[in-house]
Image 1 (cartoon, rainbow, N blue to C red):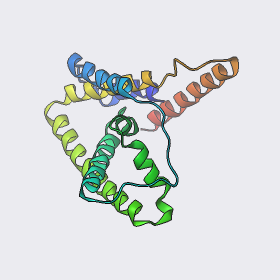
Image 2: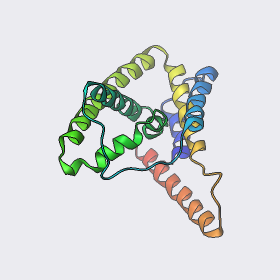
Image 3: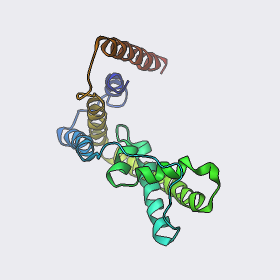
Image 4: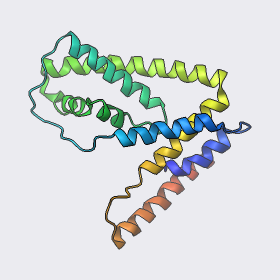
Length: 187
């Protein structure tokens, strides 16, 4: 789906703009760099011993929320991957997995994450607005780099493939393409 959105992005957002090479390469570099730094799989704990709630934890959770909120607006940037790299993803997921316990040592950090998400979205929107207004072609080229690299890093090159996986992947590719191109036609 991401790969099929590239022509729509070029036709819609980049219409009349020339692609700038340096910002495009920066966008590609960020995603490939994040993928290189990605530590891989870990575990979500359903009944962990959470860290004690103190000022440092609350500030850390606000920062985690800011990163999560900011990455929500950036196409191609995986907030989960960034949180994995900084070592906060599984703590965040563990808090979410335990939200129905209604324990204060779970709810308080989640509230601070929520505050951070709101701050991250607002700040990210202002930064994006600033760059779109002043450096439209460069910023859109940067976004294009993020999108292109994101579509490439999602390809599981290390997976083992049999005929069933190849056929189901091809069908998913066609189905995803139909959805994206169909939604593009609706615009």
